[in-house]
Length: 144
Image 1: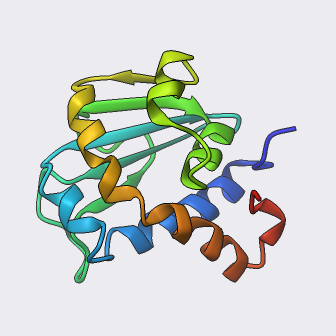
Image 2: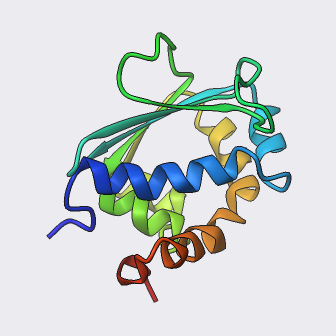
């Protein structure tokens, strides 16, 4: 059974994470400085989220925009496709990106070295995600 029962649950959990990350001074400036448009395509349930670090953010206090849905009008520099369960495990720090790419758990299109350079930037999200899940009353989703 998938971790997220539907799109609404996935969106709530991951949008909370991305919304915190886009304003976090430890994480967001490094992503902004990449000037990349990064799109995550999730399955089971289906969702598309795009990180737009190629343009100035529209929200005060944010370093980049996070857009949900297929119709962003943006062409991604990097596209990462995976099951939502893999994303959930990744944001817990339980999935090694290189291993997941080799096993085709994550399918990447675009300049992979640029994404790999961002891995140190997102490391604080590995502790942030389970903490946010607990704060949301979803400790049942926290991996140990």
